[in-house]
Image 1 (cartoon, rainbow, N blue to C red):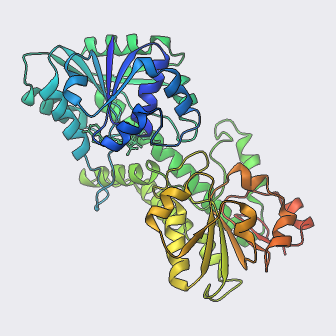
Image 2: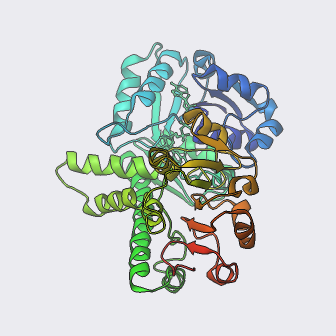
Amino acid sequence: MKIAVAGTGYVGLVTGVCLAEKGFSVSCVDIEERKVDLMRSGISPIFEPGLEELMIKNRKKLNFTTNYKEAYKDADVIFIGVGTPEKHDGSANLNYVYSAATEIAESIEKDCVVVVKSTVPVGTNDKIEELIKSNLAHNVKVHLASNPEFLAQGTALKDTLNPSRIVIGVEDSIAGEILQEVYKGFDAPVLVTNRKSAEMIKYASNDFLALKISFINEIANLCEIIGADIDDVALGMGYDNRIGNRFLNAGIGYGGSCFPKDTKALHWLANFHDNELKTIKAAIDVNENQKIKLIKKSRKYFNSLKGLNVAVLGLTFKPGTDDLREAPSLVNIPIMLEDGANIKAWDPVGMKNFQKKYPEGVTYCFTIEETLKDADLCFIFTEWDEVKEFGLSKYRQLMRNPIILDGRNCYDLTSAKKANIIYDSMGRETIN
Ligand code: NAD
């Protein structure tokens, strides 16, 4: 079976590489020449643990190209994994998906299955099918399937090779049978449903996770006020297997390319049908507020950050990725700059991307030590292992004023008490 994938971002490239690992010959298509050149020379354009190594291992089964006509013309299965970013009104921008669909229609010269992996609003697959059928250059049959992706950045390879579930949304049996054949080598529950349900499963799953994060963050905020400890509260809740112990980490809110846009897109769609989802609206509002929680906390210690040396540890929206989309750092650093802070920042993989956005005003450091040197205040935005493993006593030694505002609860309070520092984290007692 010949496979093509449209888009070589976090979803497209991981899908292509994992399918090659399972033995398929895969053409990975992107519109960006720069990315294709990098991949051809064995370099992954995105950081994802293990991806580059697996890409190199399977290079004989992988073809990288901008020539979509060549890639699609004789493919048996074509996955669409292009971006669906947020529009100003919160709805999903489907332009990339529709362009990829049109390019597929213009190129295919034999019957094939087109599989939509991109996260798209309920009903979009029907529109994609119409678009392809009305733009076909050759007299061929196209079967369209929705196959939403559930990988998480940072663990994308593991999530793709050992998925929690495979959801196949189809309106005809041929598409379903061929996709089941593609996924034969994967050990996961397979749910075959109709396309609209598959599209909805993806949004409902992401929005539920966003809701769980916003819920625990609100509880954490209340814990701080009333003197309870969110770590113990979450632990106690998690023993109940109806609740589960995952996604109960309090913090400065969710970011990334999925939860923020997928909550807004579903909320938009529900409103469009005059049926507001009030829980999702609450998750969005809580998250917006949560992202600036550390800046608010800093006002307890300083009226303004003007002239202060501020250390920032972590820029990406989560560890294990170089992705900055919707990262709390992007909300907080502009506020700090506006305030007049002298900012030094460190991130093991996200600095290059951040520097493109903020080439000036921030000093980028290659070590945590260099970042903390002479700082008056330290903000932790990402729970990188390097931060969690960095001894708290070193903050005291390196900083001018050892005040640590930890947005990810990287340290336990017992160690913080021993370190003779001010340690203000999320939903827990402030140590000073
Ligand atoms: P991304 O922005 O990282 O990558 C998209 C890629 O598509 C880019 O490289 C872009 O150049 C390319 N592209 C755009 N138009 C194209 C075209 N016509 N033909 C070929 N390539 C084209 O996006 P992503 O994070 O991989 O997300 C892709 C989709 O998957 C989105 O709908 C997203 O919501 C969904 N998703 C993402 C994740 C995640 O963790 N990133 C997880 C699950 C689902």
